[in-house]
Structures are given as C-alpha cells and as structure tokens.
Amino acid sequence: MNDKANDRVFGIDEAARHLSGLVKAACEGPVRIGDDGKAAVYLVSKHDFDAMLDHVEEITDALWLARAELAEQGGYVEGDALALIVGRLEEIENAAVDAQQGG
Image (tube, rainbow, N blue to C red; front, side, top):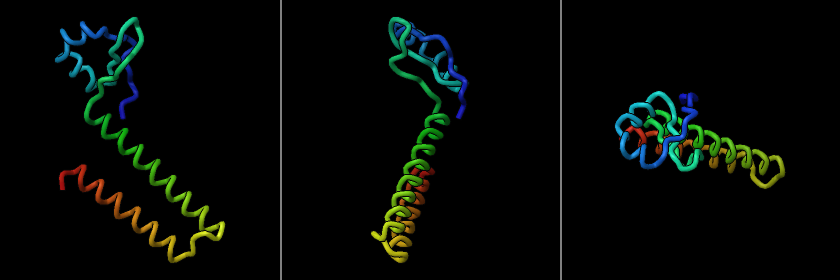
C-alpha cells in the first residue's frame, strides 16, 4: 500500500469540481477531503483499498489462530479440533481470495 498521503485537505465543493484530478492523485496516495481543514473522508486507489482489506484479513486470521492456540493450551480444544478450526480458516481465506480475484 502506498503510504504517501497528501497533506492538504480538499474542501468538499473543491473536490466535487476537481474529482477527476483527485481520482488521478489518489493513484499516487490517499487524498483527504473534508471541511475546515479536517479530513472527513479519504479517496484511495483500488490498489490501496485492496491492500488495506488484505491487511485486515491477515490480522483477523491471526487473531482467530491465536485464539484457537490459546484455547488448545487451556485445554478447551484438542489437537484434532484445532486442526479442523485451522482448516476451516484456510478454506474461508481461500474463498475470500477467489472471490476477490473474480473466481
């Protein structure tokens, strides 16, 4: 994901007048839009948005895996049950990747 953010906050009216230019600028990095110099929304490229979704998915998967491992350590889930949980998480992840790729 591109970390370069435009320091300027474009006003809503200005953003509406120059939307095509801001869309092009968003390909270089997030564009901030709002009022009174405070960002209300960010315009980001599809690439950056997809990268953010990927990061959220990775974090969510890691959280579920950590919870499953803690449960196993605490005696709440046995090895075979944990393998089923991890397998199911992998299926969900693969389905999400397939859906994202249009397949």
